[in-house]
Length: 202
Image 1 (tube, rainbow, N blue to C red):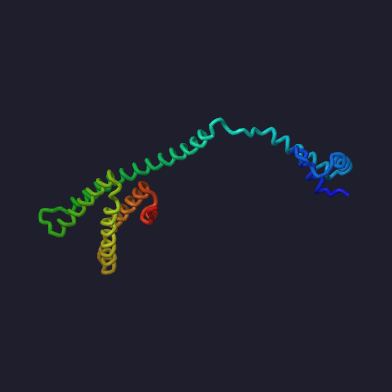
Image 2 (image 1 turned 180 degrees about the vertical axis):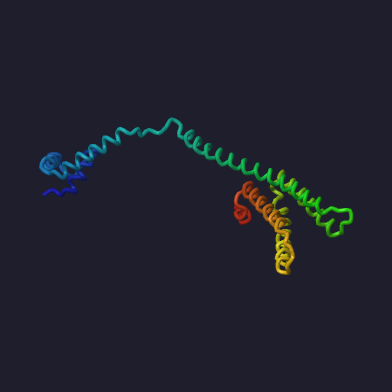
């Protein structure tokens, strides 16, 4: 007795134009009498016809198709990067103006050396922000300074809050926001900063 699996394998070989292990007359005789193998034969023929209807030839120039997809993705990423960089640059310029105003509020006819130093530091930060908005490669140095200022200011603010004084929360938020914008611009310009710092030469 012929096994159904062997018959179905022989039918698949017939569709593919290959030689089967079962003679054609034996195969046809079994197919005429077996409803299960008839269903398999009809389904296989239908599947083979559906594959034949699908165009399998590659496009004339496959590289053009690949480059078109890559170029579209590159343009999308580049446009987003330009938009983020522009937003960061504008924000840094506005922050520079804030620091200049902040320094101006410290100026007075009878100002102390400490107040003069504080005003000078804020003018220096404003100048640095304008510089890194043009040269983002210098962000790490400026970020270190602004971050250190935020850390010291936070410590003094906590001390003031504990002793009952008035903590300069608006100044703290300004420094924190400046750090956030610098980090955002650094990431946008170079990618992940941790990946840059951990890079290994090949």
